[in-house]
Each structure stands twice: as C-alpha cells, then as structure tokens.
Length: 116
Image 1 (cartoon, helix red, strand yellow):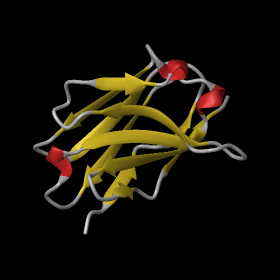
Image 2 (tube, helix red, strand yellow):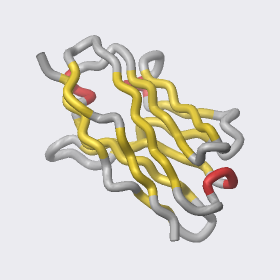
Image 3 (cartoon, rainbow, N blue to C red):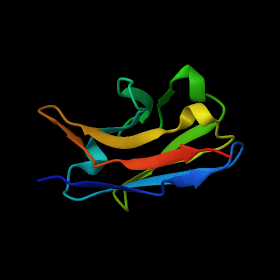
C-alpha cells in the first residue's frame, strides 16, 4: 500500500513563496513519475508539474512556468514543489500523484491560499 502525505500549504501574500512537500511510503517511489496537481473551487483538477523517476525531465503548465519548480529526492521518497511569485489565481488545493504501470496514487491534498 502506498501513502502520499502532502505538507507545506498555507496562506501567503501575492508575490510570496511556499514549498510543498509530498512524502511517499512504500518502495515504488524511485521507479515512478510524480506529479503535482491542483483544484480550485468550481474548477477541474489540473496538472501543474510533473517529474520523471530520475528527476531529469520535468514538465510545467504554462501558467506556472518560470515561477514553480518541481524536484524530487529519491533517497527521502519525497517530491517538492517550490512556488515563487505566487498569484491569487494559484489558490487551490494541491495534490501529489504517483503514476505506476497499474494504478495512480493520490495524496489527501494541501490548501494553498494566496491573498492579501
């Protein structure tokens, strides 16, 4: 059984920064791609960023390019999302996901609120 636990969310002013963490249990972390998603009220969940198992290749949705950075530490079974220059439209619940060949696992989410 794989469990993902996100942390690091909170309330931040526009222009501020937050670093989200997602810690995974189990032994599959280092072999699989990871992603960060978000869901704002009344909107569909969207992919924000993802990283391959090695950490070499990353992808970002256009709206966060140049502001967010995804990274992973396979020794700690943890994936990170560094979020800089935050905007009110970044407000959402952020989820991490691990993609395996058989099934995807999701975390419970962490709230990020960008407001003055």
